[in-house]
Image (cartoon, rainbow, N blue to C red; front, side, top):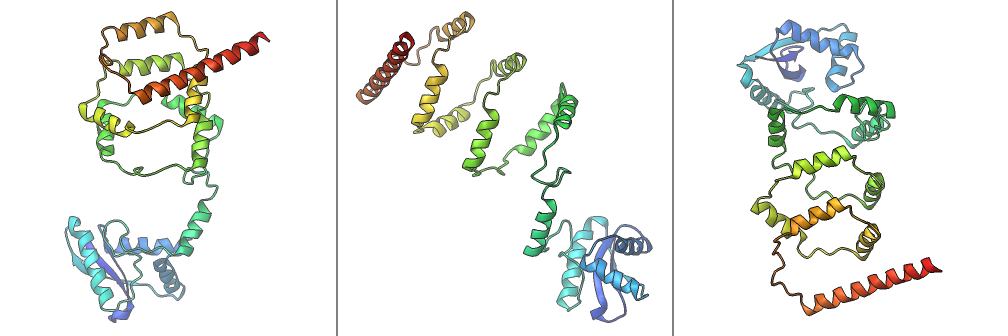
Amino acid sequence: MTLSVFDMSERLQDLRLGGTTNTSVVHDVGGRIYCTRGMRHTYCCNWLRNLLTAGVVPIQAILEVVPQENGPEAEKRWIHSLREQGAPLTNLTDGGEGTPGREVLPETRAKISAGQMGNKNGLGHTYSPSDETRTKMSAVHTGKKLSSETRARMSAVLVGNKRSLGCHPSEETRVKLSAAGLGRKHSPETRIKISAAHIGRKLSAEHRAEISAALTGRKRSPEAIMKGILANTGKKRSPEIRAKFSALRMGNKNLLGHHHSDETKRKMSVAHRAYWATQKGQRTNANM
């Protein structure tokens, strides 16, 4: 790994660019100059472009030769040293891997944002594939199964992921999500797969405790309760579903010895009275 700097003379004020290269110095100079032929308007490209327009070719001097694994650290050290000495380097960052130290001006951020508006290449947030593209994407992934190794890697990457922690969708987003999922029903094949995936699945004690803590004290709104009532009103379960419920409850002793408090009994009484009053009103209207 070679650490080099573009130099126009032996004066410190003419040292402009510090960087590393794992190719020959000649190839690195050629690559730097080639970027001036495009539309890039960085500080470095503009500086090189002005030199070439004036008929001046920059000189590249070798500062240090280091192993490749030490290149990023050496680059940071030299850039920091040259800046401390007052060299007007064209480096946008502090050197090393990535872009540490680079500051993007608000004007630049606004230009980038405006440039991405309506982007159809998948880079912008407004990208929406056509129906034909969606069909093709669906066909490509239909029946595709990930290997156990791939699943393990994906699981390991997501362990401890907190990118969405504390993220709460806005009311507008909630309405859109609700409208998108309204009336959506899984196919019989999908239902069978979901059911098979959960058969025999047992939650750990820690997982149960977390779910219990999350639901403790949580109360459904009157609107949610009414939606649940309306969704189940008149709903009849098949004999097979009834038989399954019956089999699952055989020997169930979860509520054995459980006694409701007086307040709970009162709430249940009020709820049942309201339910049967609603049923009576519906039957009266049906007979009229």
